Length: 275
Image (tube, rainbow, N blue to C red):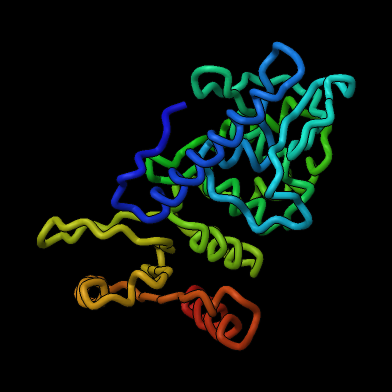
């Protein structure tokens, strides 16, 4: 497993790289205290951090501990700061060189399924399939293949349901939450990262989500869009898309929470789709 570059221009990549290094160091300390020759296989949230995957909003799970999975209960030991989990299903460990190993991304996703909401399991799955090559850890086919051959584990039902909502090649967790909002509202699945080419200039516009037949563009604007440079670029981009006949819906964090703003957004979007 190649480590993320800590000097990346992306804030999210830098943060994940720092968490990855910190977790590697913690795992190295644990490895020195183990009671048998075989290396530990790190799992659950420890594996997510080692793999530089954004953690979900977990429910009642000890993030401060290091997590290890074993195939037989007798392989568990009392080790300060370490929680052992029984995982009997086969997998090929991911190596970080030396004696640090962890479960593959899709297995880590399955292992935390029982501790998170459906929404957060979808967001976690999406985060493993990012468009950014530095962050992509799995494909939709790998999730489907895993669930087909792994017939029983706690949380599998949650995983099967999450799979129906998951989207490959998104750019952020908030985009994933937006997609889930649309699907759970009964709207059809839009295209993710839909490319529009300006017929006059040849310029490419990458739309967060698009209903191409109706020429509807849905954009999630996070805080980074509030800077002066982004505002100018966004206005110029939106004006050109409007000239090309597109209708644009701009979504912010408050639209993702239940309330009047969410209701108004969904109602306006539905009206536009059915107009």
